[in-house]
Image 1 (tube, one colour):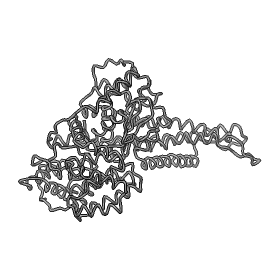
Image 2: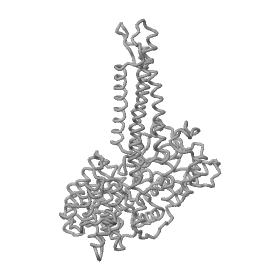
Image 3: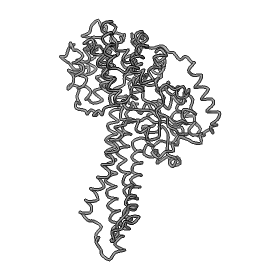
Image 4: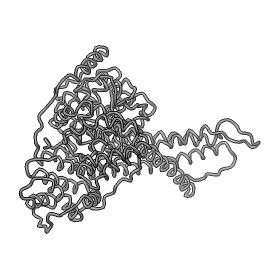
Length: 638
């Protein structure tokens, strides 16, 4: 299995493959539309006296057809891509009739789902994605979004009602794999591009049903026979275009499902979980079907085949056959599915969900090696999942409840930013009295002491829990929240490591929800182009540690970046936070291969003294957020 950065390179190649396949499909459709128009005109001549089409090939007619067809396909693709970028992953979930899962829910099944997602997000080093519930009886789930910042997870009613915790965990781990590996980004682009192709059939329908005006200037119902005939041929071509669209989906998504299944097993160390979910789908009458008008165009997002018509034609589906997926996870599988008794199954799942919250699943936190940390980036393992469960248990229950509500979530962030020095804290609170929402300020006073006593090593997990609630703010509430956080950070005229990390986390995961952010492009493809910036980043990381020989640590870390055989004249730098910010902004535009080396150098620098202090890990997290790279928990942070 590839590492995280290798998956990013694969995602780039898949994007190029998508563009190539899309271009081929458009060329074939243009030719087919030309033939349809020509055939319609030729047939029309049989009913008129004048022959205005004598040859099959006509340059002028061809260029007119090409221009109009490309205009329809291109404008449709641009429009849908823009529409999706405005809404992110939430746009796909809402398109399917999904509803946002309320944060403070009392439903045991939804609480269990939230708990599973929170554990996995913390284990993977991601902010918790918003959850959506799809009102469908079929057992299915999906992850959607242009990146980790706007990703959402949607689960059907059938999945939460019929899958036990291990099976649900396997499904959610599969969807997290798609988020981490960039598959959701590819699928969003695929959906946008293919929408333009499907507009061809709509154009044919419009031509067949449009009203026309007679020679007596009287509007009659229905299209002119000639236009209706051409429209019919174009409709047929559009149907072929839909076939092309499904072929492209299959070409770019089917193998990714196998990889996501394998990643889910690594994440949970429980192949029986995801295999069990697939077996339940096979034995359940409703299977994984999703009965919605938007299912066809979103079929490649789902955990299982969502379109009923493809179930008996697995060679054509966007997903591999159930039997093949299960046998890769459970070689002893016989191929026979036990029929699911819905009543008894839902009862047992509900009982498990109610009793699971009384269980104590603590696990010790073990320090990882630098290589182990690197291998877990993008592919968190079962140990990371156990550690995340322990971390969640260490967060006071009252704070976890506050993290699920937009009002109280803002209060938690403000409380985290309050200075320990009384005079500065009084200044901060006085500023909030004039700028912050009054109800948020009341909640702040209630939890101020509880947040102040929180273990510093739990601040990042708590912030990750806050993200879904903060993403549900209105635009005006977000602007107010951003203004208040800026006031709190600037109150002492200094920028701490935690404040900078918080700033980077909000910039990465929250800001794109409210403001259109231009996606960064790669400008640097050699390590030497940004070696000065990397030296600055590594230097400030080393400064936070307890190293006896910082110069030796610097040389060791830079050797991982530049190569062990490379002699460098670089040395430790005296960098401040402003220099770090500039360095990270430049480093963010390197290739995934260089990012791998940069992150490895940072991890080596942090772990060189055998311990990881809070400032070191928070700064490492800020670096990784700037690089759009998830950073799982390294272990016990002292």
